[in-house]
Image 1 (cartoon, rainbow, N blue to C red):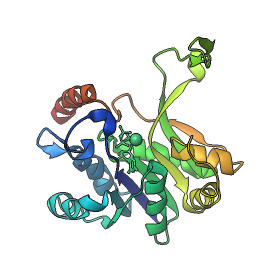
Image 2: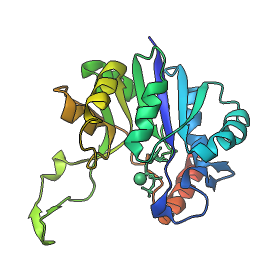
Image 3: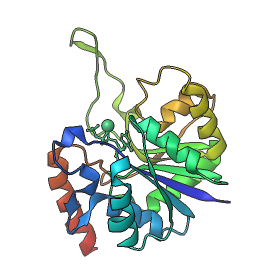
Image 4: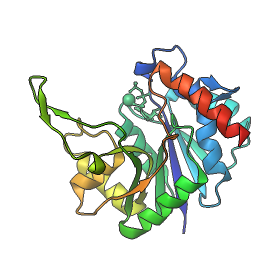
Length: 232
Ligand code: CTP
Ligand code: MG
């Protein structure tokens, strides 16, 4: 059984408004992407890692991240695409003989071995699993005019993180079929499976630490989390 991680680092980070793309910003002396890769490198569950980045960042990633930190599981560094799902698709095409794939945002540095374990147990049920957490805030859906449309019951609302884990054949086929259609509303990997197959997606707990670095204030939070985690 072969398990591959696809780590995504090809985004522009527009909401961060920084010169350096957020996945390459340093927190506590290492780039954000370092922490994301470290967990997969150290996990016995993971056989290889496909790193997806911008065309202009491939040599930086090879030299300053993969070689510098001896991430020996990174089998290939490839160029992503315009949208996140394009980068995921390129990652899927680069897999060889993979049975299960962990798709992960390089901008989420706080994954842990426990999260990977829950994800693998979850994907074995149906072939599709996402990690997330019960929403702390009440969520409301807005109508077109900016009024409250409806309020889903809070205990049913989860906010979704990565990794998202799939049987390779399932996610590959779902991508092949959705790519012929409109993908403009696709914001995560599970949506592709939800729309293109009847397979149920298992929800498992990630953690409240497993934030995505998205806007500048997330960097402040990340510094605090990292200091705390290093002490443990
Ligand atoms: N990503 C990617 N390829 C893209 C877009 C995003 O590999 N074409 C990656 C990002 O590098 C990030 C993850 O997907 O690790 C989550 O996406 P997001 O938080 O939206 O990152 P960005 O697209 O870079 O940020 P923004 O949307 O603010 O521009
Ligand atoms: Mg984005």
